[in-house]
Length: 288
Image (tube, rainbow, N blue to C red; front, side, top):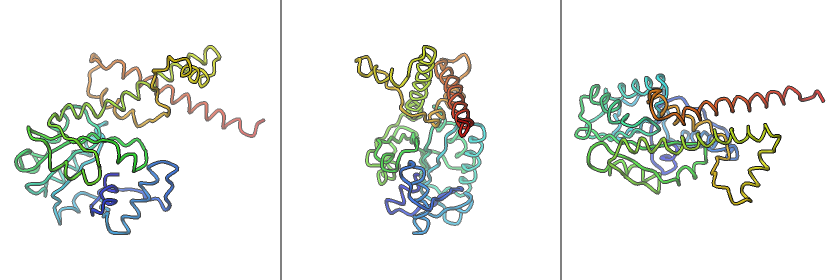
């Protein structure tokens, strides 16, 4: 997504990884199809150079690096560490490195900073610049994603002005902060909030089912009654679980994250229930 936005702004870039392209622009199916289609367009135009591994960047070491990942499972953490270590072998002095995605608080200033300093020999804040941008794409169109306000937080006491300049070319609304750990926590808030509310929606729907009430009708009448302050998500976005899982994995069972844990259990059970209902409905097709 980030690579495509830079390409759309006329800036050539290298994208490392394996990505599928779409032959047609099917924007009605959401932002994923649009992003895949645009990737193919910009590859053919020469704006985006797709590389299979980080080592291919060593011939012309980049001065601007954007690492994108969600630090959830051990597998993803290991992959991020491997990528960072490989990058550090040829990371030039004066480079600007920005980590984007979702992670637990203090992740950038500890895990990433220590990895960079250990394997590059550079000192973060002096030889290279390190910043973090809370970034979460829920599958919306490119334009909607681009128009949402963005934040980039720097390591140290100075605002990450260079990183801000880099991202202003693709995001029109960009603010900065020196409170790195707070920015990491802030990135988790929105998806976790939706994940918890989604659990509430499952619970309310179950309550209606027990009493043989149409949930959609009850929700509509709730809005008419003037008691509607629910703000319940209208769609079941499984991606919101990424943030909840990050929060849960970084907190002990005795920590104060019990509501999020409970919401995850409700959502997992509810999502399975929905799948079972769909499978059951499909199994009845043609039998009536």
